[in-house]
Length: 290
View 1 (cartoon, rainbow, N blue to C red):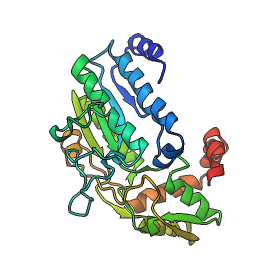
View 2 (tube, rainbow, N blue to C red; view 1 turned 90 degrees about the horizontal axis):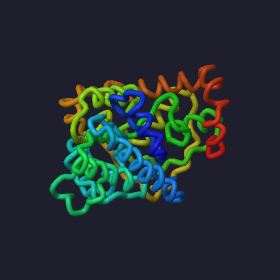
View 3 (cartoon, rainbow, N blue to C red; view 1 turned 135 degrees about the vertical axis):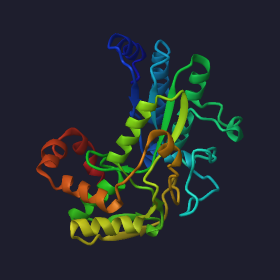
View 4 (tube, one colour; view 1 turned 60 degrees about the horizontal axis):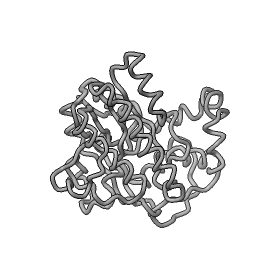
């Protein structure tokens, strides 16, 4: 994605009609110890893609943003007040969140003076690029990142090792199953908006403790829990208002955390996991962190 000339040639020579960029250096905690990788992947390489699209400005770009952009927003989401796309995003808690916010297309009037580096917005305004950002809320499911809590917790519980429960299990997350997220991405590709931002979440916030209890039930094993304080860069809760995506994209998430984790555990226990994932490069590179 950092090869601007290669991207430009690929887009023009292959008759590309839409671009969906899900590539990024992800993860809040890793950004604290490896900031340069986030600057390169999430900012410099994103600009390379936008520069390549300048030659094909009517090819719509759908790109991955993150719920982390809401950061230290003083509005703490509750069952009555989820985060909406119009909420403030000018207080990121981590470098990862800051890079995703810098990518974004949509500037609300209250943020116009504080987010002048909103890269996609600038390229839309200057060159007419069609840009849609999708704020993903804690995506989980088969073939996911092994460093994510649902994946690492599953492996540690299944192998009898302790898990660290941040914030004593109180933090809440809007866990969103991968199939629902894919439906949202496909909807955004179909809409091909000029410039928009959408939340893609499950519209349901679950406590970390409940999440662990569901894992224990699916695995048939009680976790050995070590309670620890909140990690730097983490937020207390995420919860997505998906009404904008529902209206514009026909987005309708339907996978409960119970069903989603059931499907993930089925995959984790399958021969396919061992043959195609566990013995492959991604698992080998990351499993030592478990």
